Amino acid sequence: MKKKLLATIMAVAMVASMAACGSKEEAPAAPAETETEAPAEAEGEAEPAETEPAADGADVSVILVTMDGLDNHWVNVDKGASAAAKELGINYEWMQPDHKDTALQIEVLNNAIAKNPNAICVAAVDPVAIVETLQSAIDAGIQIIYVDSAAELEASAAFRTDNYAAGKQAGEQMIKGLGEKDITTGDIGCVAFSNATQTSVDRTQGFIDAFEGTEFNILEVQYGNSEVAASQAAAENFISQGVVGVYGDNEPGAVGVGNAAAANKDWGGVAVGFDASSMTLDQVDSGALYCVMAQNPAKMGDGAIRAAYTLATGGSLTETDVDTGASVVTPDNTADFR
Image 1 (cartoon, rainbow, N blue to C red):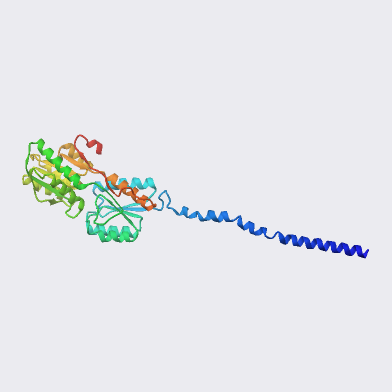
Image 2: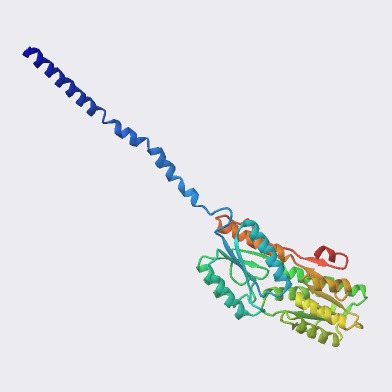
């Protein structure tokens, strides 16, 4: 009995020992479980794709800074910009001085830069004076996009009228109107809004160059400073000197010239303006203005905002200097611009 009992005890001990050895041999299975976690880690490495800018533009901010907020042209630039911003979901703001003034615009630009937007869309009052301010924005990582009037600093993009070409077209229209009155010689007066803003300089020079090779004489340019009353006074002064034509190179200038023509009913000359608004279109319909050159300000604003969005979300622009075009508005097509 004792031998059998001893044999049984030894057998049980051997089985227990073998079981223990078996459990140790299964231990290597643990590393296999850690290997199955590798694919999850690989998926985690793909996460940087999620850091790309959101397509809805929620994190994109753009500020429009114009020459002033009174001119109907800038109101329409804002309309185009705000509509595009709403469509894209961009945080958008329009900032402007209360009148055209370089120092005031620089102050507004500094306030805009302090808000650290992705882009500032700007129409420069003075192409030289604001360069340092715009450079500080670029140094801060802010994209600069020009609308209508550029500064003498390379920017990310520009959306503007070819003002020289449009000014020359305005001169050609005046020559046409004078020809209809059988007027082939005489003095011409120009009422410009600035001698510093490149937009005005180009429109005026283009207009003047249209008269090369003719018998007309261009008098010294007068400045209305984008004020209707001052522009009208300058135009009436020209009319009193016996000019056969007067040109106003922006909306307030065109309105002032049209008012002067309407106030001098015996004057037999031709008045031409620049920029279509409800007032200038009314003056074209009444005959006070022979025609006006119409820009596409809403297109400028729309294009600038879309360019800012593209750049802010990591895209690139296929075109960086866009001519937004100009059209001649006469009594035959004023309805198309209202």
